Image 1 (spheres, one colour):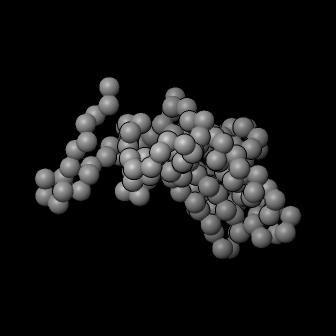
Image 2: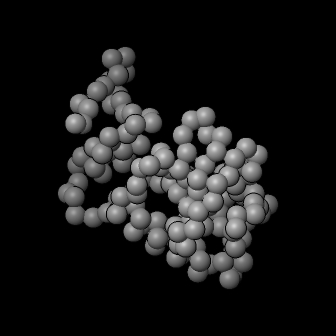
Image 3: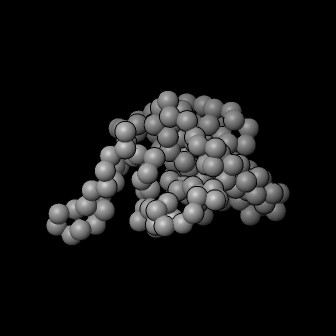
Length: 143
């Protein structure tokens, strides 16, 4: 059962769930517009974050999922296209080979995460400072 649309009594802005978002909710006002006002004839994904660290040239596209929650078909398709595009620019040394698209399975307090690389579907677990290094675009021994 979906939660009803709810608005802030002070400013009138639409409220969304931060951690337990419903299928009819987007993480941004623009994403909500896409979901509410356009026909459902194309894939749309709200990517959670993109990290680029100038000193390492690591570019990581991060999609968050709570443990046990699967990716939607549309998310997987779009993220796979982005992963393939990133693979294509690594040889030009525009970005570091540790760049990629990752699904991060974690929950608050964000101390440990199971991370899956979208292209290879290989996964690994990081925690503590190693997780923070990964999230901030540092080189981390992933495999």
